[in-house]
Length: 347
Picture 1 (tube, one colour):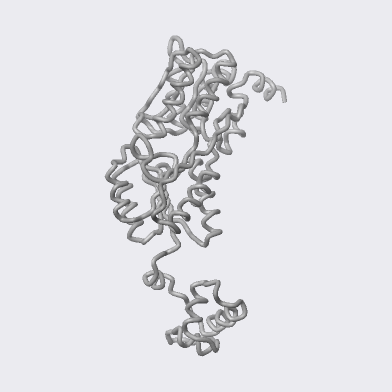
Picture 2 (cartoon, one colour):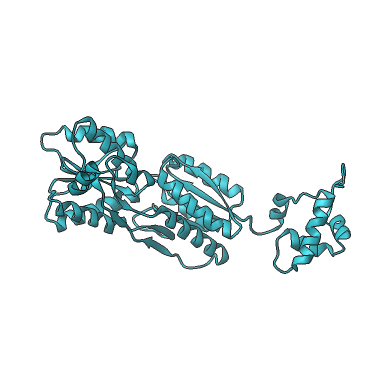
């Protein structure tokens, strides 16, 4: 029977299992140096005596906590749900866990969250920076000696440290080329205010593709959130212009889904009266009516790559900065292809 009213020590466990105190310590730390039958004997003794391993105290005695912080700017965006799933899948295989926090695109809140995560002694940080994040934050993290991997966004014009993202620029080229092949000449980009690297990458890729096609860019930046509601409101406003665009490329799928709702309210047919392309290829994109054409950024794979890089940085803290950029692919669906729209309607 478990001992009651008595604190069970490692010495008690060792005596009960018939092994040394150091062997008990290795078993509790899940060391591979201990034979399986010895491990089972120690764990049986722990159950018999009612011993509870104090992991918090143990981490104070060790250099690592087997935890990684994950800070994103929009925790409600389905992209980050898929990305975090990829992170957790990779970390579980390494017996690590993640602490997830959202900044709401506030640099001040981000500063507090990063400080709190440091106080929890995380081993590495995966950071999707808030808009207008100052260089000072990255400099401070570097002085802490905390491995930091920027994910999908980066501070400054170019990543200075470790970075994992998607090739949005090339993907925007594919999106514009597809729309030009469909006969579109008035193609607008709906994005954020340009204060984040993700905005700037979208704008740069779109501008290059439009110039390559001999078309005038039509960039619609906005200070409101990059949400479904924003996509709805901004599309309603745009489509009431005298000569509105015939195609919209939206910052993400959420905005694009809002654009589809706006077209429906105006009795316009997506893919016929106005094409719509989103970015991310969320699960909802293929299920919408009509199905949303979207640039797939593969968030699950990005999460896996970011977690793998974090673990590599923990193992080799002085390694040179790595930049991992995953390819994107255009999922052509009815919202940007009249033939697919008619096929979907007839089925």
